[in-house]
Image (cartoon, rainbow, N blue to C red):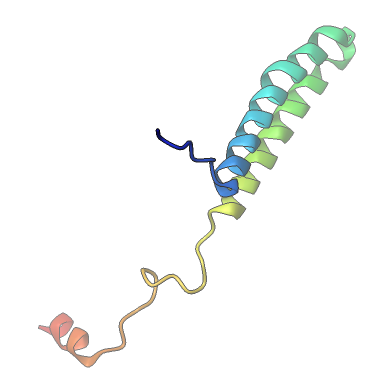
Length: 86
């Protein structure tokens, strides 16, 4: 019999943020749009745009480049400098 593996917490957290974003922008904000009077209709757009901004800021913060990333470090060897000059 196969044993079921549990998903790691590092995979669950980003997924939960995406689900919360979808629920808020598509369901809760839409219900708010239906419930408020006409002069408060702009509140739907404000909440939708604010939720989008927060989502993208958190996503950018989560996937920012690490300071010790080996792909972003420049080579300090002299061989590389000689090859570039040729």
